[in-house]
Length: 184
Image (cartoon, rainbow, N blue to C red; front, side):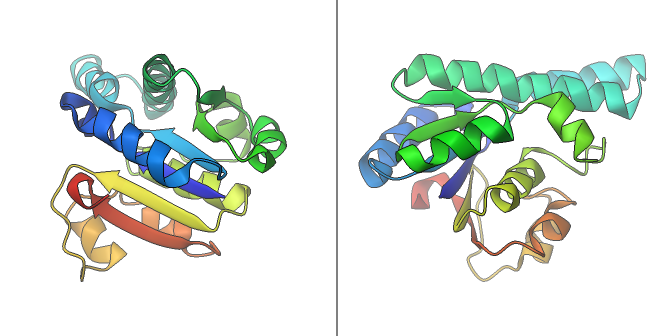
């Protein structure tokens, strides 16, 4: 099982469609889960929280909704892919050798004690998911320029990946790649 997180900023151009096409070509017939970033929807949550000063838990739930909105958009753009929301759905579907889109379930993440903070974004949620389903590989596709020699800690310091990511992957039995969309 391969988890591919597509950064929300990829939706600002044709890059997102190019990534979809590459996934279709490279991973057809394999079990793949696509994790959408929150993109512009999550950016709006950040702005609203700055303006209205609502609490982190509310912002966290709204950011999960942003990922769900992106999952709906992905499904609309690639209708043959299947949207799944819960771990139980993923465990059932992961052996079908299909490409799935994860639309995270807030209640399930709350039960898993995922911290409600901006230090945990869709990057860390993708890592959490990869651990939960015993993925073999986690690929984060970013719009940022990535130094292939940089450690995960360096990428976190550069704010290319979120601050909680390194902790989320430390017990994972999967390989991790953080790559620029052009290298995907």
